[in-house]
Image 1 (cartoon, one colour):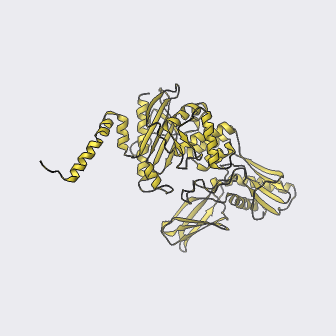
Image 2 (cartoon, helix red, strand yellow):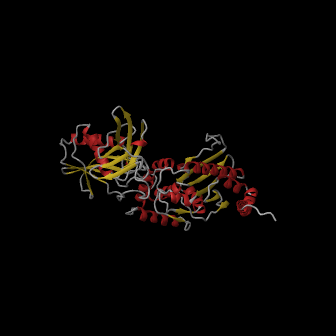
Image 3 (tube, rainbow, N blue to C red):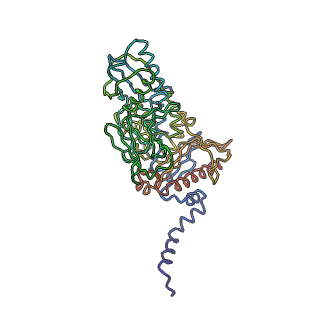
Length: 462
């Protein structure tokens, strides 16, 4: 008998163990697609005929996985049901004696340009009343609970993880610009809008000699950031989160009023809103339009604020529990566990079957499809390609998690409601809170190619 080297023996045993899976992949085109993607972890999906409610295809459909931002589909339906599509969030300026108050109403999309319009109306009202500058200027954000960070496990500098308050400006973000000159780097922090970009005086930043960490943060008189000088090129920009949103909005409002001749005192934060006369008001666009943008740009802060507004709860976990109760009331009683409204928390769980049922049932009845983002089909090089398949869906991405849930229909074919959940939980947990860990971009590209291939396969038989 010839003795084989140990390495060959182990390799042979490994091939024997893989043989059933390889045979299955060869016989099943779906399994072949999944094997070719080399994602590791798990891939689950469910496909439902929207018109009949019949389940057409499934794989690991009852495996609870992280929904990531596909959870925003639930939040969208919940907020529309509880608040109504025409709901608007109001930001007001109130005069109470010798105090001027900027009162936030939980508007998740208030920006510097809208705040400037509010400042102009305020100055005009004060001038018409013949009053001088008030003795006190306050900001109230009590329309929503104050929450320090959407997810404390995420890196402090990530712009999609800001604080929550009833006073929100520029998605509670400040814009950092840097340029290298003869005297070193010039860094600036701005409350950037579409038209106006005043300086943000409530935050500071300095470049320091180090490689890691990329950023540090301290909260004192100012929100103080440092950035690693080694990470800066000749020039660049990025957003940073704001942790003291009332003072940030008050500071910008003060600057905008001063430009029109009304000098306000240094802003202070108040917990209780006193009685007073309304001087000016800015109302947001309708909730339906806000949700459309949220679904396209996947803004976490918008999801949390509209979820909190819909529930009236005092914190995000309680609000997520209220949304879960609402979903049970829609006839979907199992297959999910919610801990926020945005999908940012890795503790959220949903099954592909539950998500597909939501899309096909309450989603179709509640007009979810027009609010979803059109997803183009792409070729091997990532370029958009013409196709007779129309996809409207919500993406969901965390480190080593890539999901897609929505609607797909070939011209002349039946409409499919689907949910595809792909995740490598071990790798996600190992990189939790990290920004673009090694290997995640290539993994996500393979996951997205798999999603398209699955949809094309299902539509070919529809």
